[in-house]
Amino acid sequence: MTDADRVANDLLAKARATAMKLLARREHSRLELDLKLRQRRYDAETIVAVLDEFEREGWLDDERFADIYVRQRCEAGYGPQRIQAELQQRGIEGMPASLAAVPDAEWRELALRMRVRRFGGEVVDDWSERGRQGRYLAQRGFTMEHIDFALTQSGGE
Image (cartoon, rainbow, N blue to C red):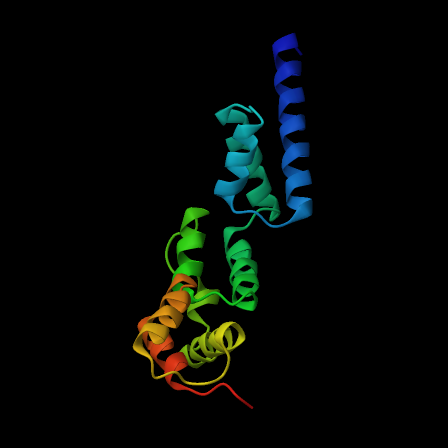
């Protein structure tokens, strides 16, 4: 084995260890892990080799990442449009099955809960206040249908 081979193997081993540490903390998409390894100045060939190996071993899985991400963002009170946009920024293209599986009724109820938590349970007749509440829900990623539902329903128990 030449010195160049040893250096390449050492670099590959370091990249693997770095990627494993990152994945031990939380799930990452392939794009996120690629970017983090690039930030640590690993070369593209080494990164591709590590990521391909991790995908073969099942340690890196974009579908699993999307499932976990969707669940976490739903629990945090975000709507489907925002979640899908965030997933696209993380390299997940299309509509993940876990996002498509959430029934529309759940999104409407989540939008209502978020409105009630932020603004209280009373339905408001003032158009400027309704606009303010609607913008808040839109920024959280809810559709107009979800927002209309949330703005017309009383949230008081």
